[in-house]
Structures are given as structure tokens and as C-alpha cells.
Length: 199
Image (tube, rainbow, N blue to C red; front, side):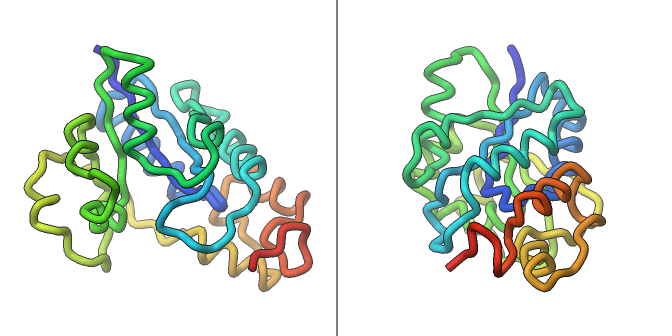
């Protein structure tokens, strides 16, 4: 049975900690493939994201060097609000016989009990958690469901901080892949005077 990881997020922008976590998951779980799934619009975020085409392009640049990394466009195709359960149902129906691994950060894991039909979701995948300090405790019902942890080196990158650095005119080369930094500069993303200024 093929083992496929699912790694979803806004990737607004994708950064080095995302890439590091994906590499760790690939090796620690002996995955045949890891699919990056940019969301169209996360249900739990009200702010406007960078355009989907830009976020997709940045993910493509970030994963280009690893053939086992695959961009999965199902949530971009569906548009609208993205729910992980809808994605897993769609993929599992289209590709039976795959062992799916859902990779979550500790902050996502802590909020999993608020996700749509989370009990059905965890019945369809193996949960894989990347621990991180300083996040709320996990709901006991969620914690009691089968899951695995993977060790990730301490990295402090966050998309929120990177957007703030760009808006302040500060360099981000240490936090994102070089190709992503060049794309952001070329398209003037996340700048107060840029073409897609956030509300």
C-alpha cells in the first residue's frame, strides 16, 4: 500500500519551516509522496489571503527540488471555503488503496476538535503531529485518538512575521527559499503599496 502525506495550509507565503517539516515527514514516515495542498480560503481565517495563483506559484517554487513533493490543487479547483474532510473524502474516493497521513502543526492539532466532523476525518487518515511549544493544550477527545509525533528542529519562521517584515521593508532571505523571495519581490506581494494590499 502506498503511503501518501497530506500537508495543507494557506502558505501565505510558504517558508523554510514548512519545507523542513515536509522533508522530516517524508523521511520519518517513509512516505512515497507528500502532497502540498494550498487552501482557497481557510474556514477559520477571516483575513484576505494573497491571490491563489501567487500562493500556488510560490509552493511550486519551494518544492521543485524534491520529486516526492507534489502540488495538489483540489482545494484551489473547488474554490470557496476549504474543509480538510472534503479534501480527504475526495482524494480517498478517487484513489482507493492509499494509506493517507495528515500532517498537522501543534497549533492545528490543538484546534482539531473544532474542525468539521473531525471524528470522521481522523478515521480516514493517520494523524501526524509536529510538536511546538507555546500552543494551547489539546482537547482530551482528540488526544485520545491514534496519532504519531515527528521531531522538527526548532524554527521560528511564521507567515505572519514574514508578511510583517516585507511590509516594513525588511529582508526575508533567511526565512523563505531563495526562489520564493525573488517571486515575492518581483510581484511586490505583501507590500503596503503592492497590487494585492490586504484589508
